[in-house]
Image (cartoon, rainbow, N blue to C red; front, side, top):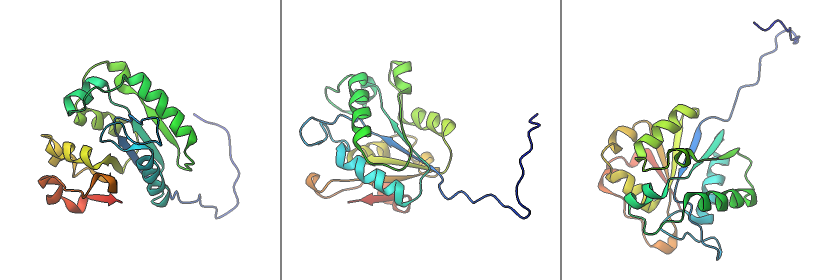
Length: 189
């Protein structure tokens, strides 16, 4: 039991916390060396910048960058992914270069697991570890893959998707389940 007394003026009320929620960024984070373009159909440097500025505008309290294992990426259809430790180290370097006012952390839970982890297991882990409400930042291709998974309809009720789609990839064509739940996601240009 804490016996230290704190003196405050009469009528003092603590300031209301304005920042709330966690933005999970789920991506391969395979950023190529030339100009920060994604090496696969992921976010890339510009996608990370867009998500960070969106989080600042929405007063999100934390950004958690989730780095999946290469076995997970192979099952998702990503061909020849780099090892996790290389993607993690390049992500940490990229994160240092970003000018973000929201606290951001790199989560490498799959580095401890060293095997395939389904996306719903990763989201369950992130939900236990971070504060609600939850937002998930994905590229357009990753969002369509997520919508094709079995547990999507259960998860879309618990979180909101923030989809970053680059104009270079062409028009975004959402998965039919994404189109069905179009009120549960935002599309960033």
